[in-house]
Length: 112
Length: 115
Image 1 (cartoon, helix red, strand yellow):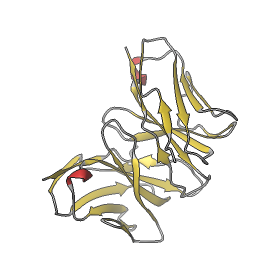
Image 2 (cartoon, one colour; image 1 turned 90 degrees about the horizontal axis):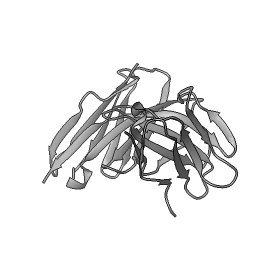
Image 3 (cartoon, chains in turn yellow, blue; image 1 turned 90 degrees about the vertical axis):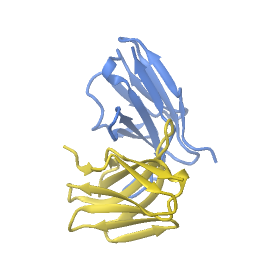
Image 4 (cartoon, chains in turn green, brown; image 1 turned 60 degrees about the vertical axis):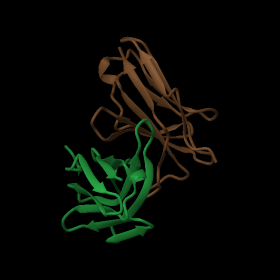
């Protein structure tokens, strides 16, 4: 039962353009979402989070949008840089629990 | 401020042997989480521990797997009698406080290969 889905396994974007990574979830109890970036042979690095009481959160080049009615969130990276090339995981969490439920990841490649 | 430390980074075991994975949380963090990533999959929660207590082990296989976080020293994830299906990357994360919406900071992982 995949509660968090990242349906695009990979994405290629030109340097300087916008990268949009998508994530869908099925568990309506989720009220907190996070995005992590992961380079090969390293652990995931926290990028940005959003509570379900918001529909947008911005941090520098990274913005996360949450559409609760569609059970969908997206991560926008603008402008994209070659160093952004990595696997991006979204994760959800619901109140009263500690564990994150991760998607399967999207591999982003930013072309110079 | 050192991040989450895990060792070893790579571990090779033969079927039937034991694997011990260690995790030292970030300084000031007393909450530890273990996740497993199988090839081509996302990270899956295994267990959440505080010092000397297992809080949630709902993701741990019922047999062969155990975890501890003693008063002194690192957290240990122990896998007895390993099988090939245990081959995966095991990540440890830590947070300064418990509770909902606490960001978890991950270590570099231990890659376990069972021959």
